[in-house]
Length: 498
Ligand code: ZN
Image (cartoon, rainbow, N blue to C red):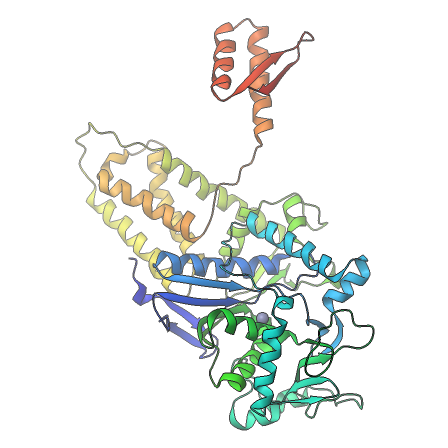
């Protein structure tokens, strides 16, 4: 049953599942690396948002007070690692002939719209990197003061060599300095770095670089890793509970965040590091070059060539929850179709259960065996949730509960065999897992307009056949809902608001 003490999550830092104990209960500080807003959101964004949405929902359910921070990256994320290439934002602005901040607003808005459709909870604070340049500069100053960063020609680099004398650079990702060095290309003559693994905290802006701010080291822009450290410290303090992101962020992004934090504050930024796995398309990695990069918009309107029709946001949500967050998800049309079937089945059970009414009069014998069986299924749902958010097993268990519920819905059994308490418990528990924790909601499959058109065609038919009782009934029912039917001389029928 609901019990905070059994909740275990996998900590990437310790490489094992740990009982979740917040630093300062009942408060839980959580930071999730948000998107770089230079393109439409895709399946990877959906997986990240949904994974951590489930975590926040469960923490809420356990009565924790979650402070959920998810940032927006709008500067400093360069095209290639190792501080090279054009800023992704600036490149998109050049291609789309927009101001960089127009690019940021455009894709932030579409990200929010997509996430709302997926029914994810909003973060408590959504800080934007360019809104925190002062904090980033202050953080760099501290790291320089602590002798773990140096300035060269207007850029500032983190001193990985010096840092690794005291700390383990690779503690999160499990990488070794020697391996990293052998994988790094030799520094070209132009590089200002003292050591190949050093990374930029601040980059000098070249004359053509658009995004630039004044700093003690001249005009430039912050490094991508730095912004998440600066914003997480500002809103959650130097040491907070959970830091999340995709597995691909664990190196270099999160490894560098840890280094910056230890360099500035001598403390690990987060107690628990959580990473979700990636989405593959028909077993292959998503990439623009393979033409299998499906945006959420394309999925919802069915416009990508790999799709046969539109798939609703709730089907995608269900599809993502069918896998454990640390496993890869292989996306395919067949898998989506089966997710669609599963979602609709569970939704119909949920809706059907809520329509059932317990009759007061019966003196039916209560089926204690069935109640016991249901209790053990509820228990299982909590066990799976406590086992590192195993949503896949919860869905399977909800299907077991559904088998029982469908006996009642189909009229094979009377709900009264559960008794009043048993019936309430069934409704509550199903709602907790389906709706509150998994965040699945009813996806409307028909618009009000289409529904009214169906009613109007029944109305027309009844009028033609002189069934005036039906005609009057439809008129009256719609009028009660502030809708008036208009009969045209041509025989056509229309409606308007009263
Ligand atoms: Zn980040």
